[in-house]
Image (cartoon, rainbow, N blue to C red; front, side, top):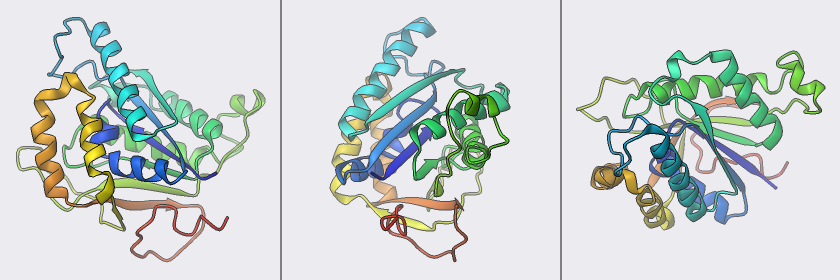
Length: 247
């Protein structure tokens, strides 16, 4: 079975940035997983929750509800601090993601680029940086050897993609987005993507903003191929598993 791992920073990222491909590939029989680095407890929109711990619990459940709708087989929220991923121990975060990659053994990994996507959110950028290191190091027998002593084995995922776009948000900081190398049609899944975002009820004030951004994004989700297990010429793709289905 082909496997896809999506690594995000906050609950609602999985729907807003990756909901189309998660729905598309899960429906096609791909085993899809989501790992979210924070519980989003610093969100301005809190759905009535006063304490951070209460909001964490709510947002974890919202992520689970969204992933269920998208067909995601496994979702997990890690314990890192929202709004402070740049101050976490980089090596510790990477080690945790290497553990996930060696355990889940995905063929394709999708995440953010260092740019932080169109929102330029620092947590998005840090999620991408940590994932990029984990993608490389999960395959190496000289990295995080304690995991190997516990029974895990190195795993070389075949492709790493960053989500990207062909528009900017003027109200956000300046970003330099990665060029598009994969254009994935998600036309049949747009309604489900919007419904999945709506599962994040605490973020309801952002629903209209999200739908407007989705309208600007059009009928495709766009990605940049950042790394591959095999050296291949760069060309426009229309399937994240292109070249892998015959493995």
